[in-house]
Image (cartoon, rainbow, N blue to C red; front, side, top):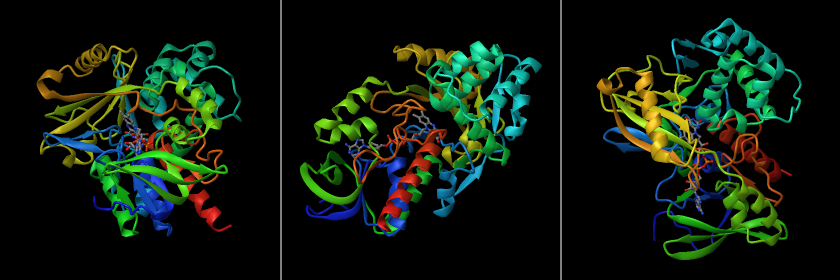
Length: 435
Ligand SMILES: Cc1cc2nc3c(=O)[nH]c(=O)nc-3n(C[C@H](O)[C@H](O)[C@H](O)COP(=O)(O)OP(=O)(O)OC[C@H]3O[C@@H](n4cnc5c(N)ncnc54)[C@H](O)[C@@H]3O)c2cc1C
């Protein structure tokens, strides 16, 4: 019997389906709060799209590029609480334009990253707009920029940001969702927020969470496929899981699903949710491509995020080894780029990304070697659901919660959004326990 495998009749306070960052953050916080917790993961490794694999001495991401978007958000608070080590970046964002490369150390300096006075004035107008009480213009952010702002440089400025952080084009994010995100970023930025890189990268966080879960007697079972979420009288009370070739039923007072909204509803064996499911299946998850590069010198000169409107496909990149050199062999750097998948010809999209790298770095061939390329789509997407269309963490089914990047609270992005949602789920479970 594999280590940590449950007995057939085991019962837990909380069953977590999926050991991505959403599932593990929830499991760590809940086990620390005294709940008996078991996590089931279908794959042979934990962390999902938030871990890495060592290849030739480089920590190649399974998804996240080793960067947490803010130092004042829920993610870093949880890391601090659990003693998981991280460091802040020295730069908030750098922009590489065709003839201009400028960075800022915090949100207050953002105007300096723009090329012209007209673009800066246009940005001031957008900021004024999103700081107003939220109104729904009913159009995409791209349409808003074109019809109400009309500044090409500012369009490219925001395009690089949404491509990189949301894996979306400006036409695919609503102005309402984008205003909320920008307001959140600006308010946090004014508090001297910055990015952070966990020591050991994403895998460092996963290792830390695993230790917290085991220290509080929680269990994590890998190669364990959750087949069904059991619901009786509109209340979730267990799962059917296949482990080691055998299906077993386990009961739990609360079920936390980290499987994404589609898979979660697929596992609920009830006709009444087929409508929700067909609506969800119709939506295509955002897709992207990452190129992992070995560099023999520091290519960026800072540890923050670089956005690249100069690129036709590559919209941004990070070099986490500027903070944690252990993510690459001694004396080398790991450079990670991102681009959205603009069409289904993945090979061609990668070639366009590589062409961008030659444009961005004239010495690319002398200094860099491409280690690998990864595309993120379908079952392993950039996000389970388009930003702004996330489903709430609470489901219509009592005691069934969802965590992950299809369930981020409004205005919260990337793994920070996943952590914010997980914290809300943990608070709700703790509160219902005390009722
Ligand atoms: C290329 C890329 C770069 C990114 N960069 C960053 C970044 O630098 N910073 C940042 O903050 N965010 C970043 N993100 C976003 C971040 O990685 C994701 O939001 C986050 O990892 C999603 O975690 P999750 O828990 O929602 O899902 P997942 O990681 O997908 O976890 C779900 C888990 O459930 C398991 N599972 C599925 N079905 C079953 C089943 N039937 N039974 C049991 N288990 C099952 C899966 O195997 C998986 O392990 C990036 C994403 C991508 C794709």
